[in-house]
Image (cartoon, rainbow, N blue to C red; front, top):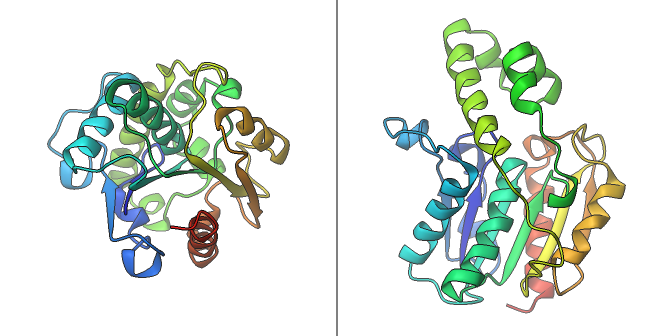
Amino acid sequence: MKMFCFCHAGGMSTYYSFLKPQSLKGIDEVYLFEYPGRGRKCKKEGYKSFDECVEDACKQIVKANVKTKEFVLFGHSMGAFVAYETACRLQKEYNLYPYHVFISGQKPPIRVVKGHYENCEKHGMEFLKELGGVPDIILENDEIAKYFLDICIKDLRVLQSYVPHKAFEENLPAYGSIICGDHDAEVSVEELKDWKPYFKNKPTIKVVEGSHFYLHDKQKDLISFINNELELGCI
């Protein structure tokens, strides 16, 4: 079983390096999907649209030679939408769907809110500080902060082009699990319930202590949750 992880806007794949096969039940390999323009893909041109991002994700997963129900998707924040829409496209265009989709720190597509791109451009690092998840090493270095802010703005511009599916249009046969922090400024606990129509099987909803970037301090809790969910699915 393979796991594919999609990170938040402005994030790098290494942020999720704590998700290791040794810690995850039934997972043999973990693929940390890297968006272009940063990390190991720093020299590659960024996506022009959200659709391009999803198409790239699908190609990478197909290239990994996975079969239906032999892989798992995990996405946090922007990455949650990437994970969900990738699952939908794999099912529709490749007749391939994941065993499980983990949605972290994100409201359902029907409740998507646009405008972060404008807020990020207007308020810069102040907006990102309020959202949380920005390492101190970035905040303390103007040059690094500018580089990071530029990545965030580009990612949020991509997210701005996201045209979400309605729940009745795509109803994934995969298992679904939803998790977020109880003080997430981006998502309310009530909004999490609206993910239910997007999965044929009723998804599990888990709320942990923390902000939008709860996983910074709750890595063990997240791993435990993932393992419990995978175990319940009887891998």
